[in-house]
Length: 424
Image 1 (spheres, rainbow, N blue to C red):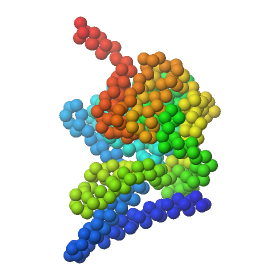
Image 2: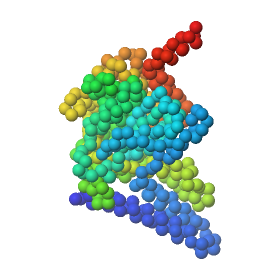
Image 3: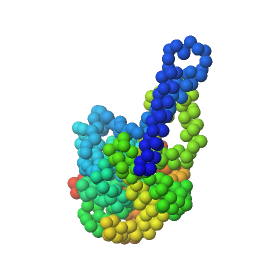
Image 4: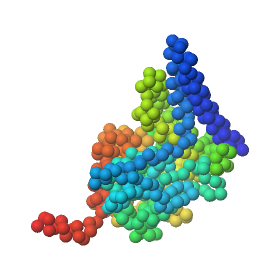
């Protein structure tokens, strides 16, 4: 019960800060105070506006916000989100561009389950939509999943990916971003033995901890310093009475958010001080750069306790993927069994979460894959976020990924004949 009390206490503190912000904003906005020639009231209103928005966003799942896109015909086409494979812990969704001829490139974008919603990949999805049929793994917030749904650990996560790949078929190209990279590699290897015909054509791993020991970061050091007993005692709580998942053991998203912020505390503090100043001067906007970033960054989700603990224990501490010793439902998964799926890794030279060397380790594990089906790219000057959503992704990495996809897509016989006639 004490864990449940802690969860409710944390939610109470968040709710209180939201209320304080709303109260300060309301008081500072009274017309009567405008007669007082003191900037203090304007600053109080600004502080309240920023504070209320900050703490309110922590419990709201962001919307994808992709209403339409301009296709090759020059017309705007509505984008609908279609449910493909529903599940208790996550869904496979498809971004359907209505009225557009289906694209040849079919991409499964595997979103991370590391504290943020899949909407963190919004800009990645938007950049791929003009050229691809985009499918995304939309993971659910553990606090909203009843205890009756059962457990969900990294083996269950892997089997979810296996089901998604089977559903989409062998013409799929998979792109895994950050945390799911090792489990996506394992899911592909699992299919290589169990259902070879369902394997995707290519697998692109972006900034993932395939071998966390290849290049230490604060994340890997933390995993080494803390024992599993300490993690379970200090990080795991039971969902409180407010949510459908009451009683479920989780790693709260608010704790993960605190960890994220602590890694760059001074940077975040300056960003909020600057935003309060902008609001006080009347220079801020509802969807300005600060709000656009933090509305997403602050929206966090809980992970099931078994998923969080098994990730730390089996991926980071014991390195089961790095040692090719991972098992699913008691069955050993041999990454060397991947022989036909082209594999590409992408890393950022300034990535302080999955440092260079951690992701490219996947290529050495694919012992059964010929060298011509292996590729890697190191983006100079790019940090963790930049390699899948920033300028580096847009300008350099995305074109390379699409080129890799095309290089590993068999051309229809008709097109081959047309190309030969054109050459002649």
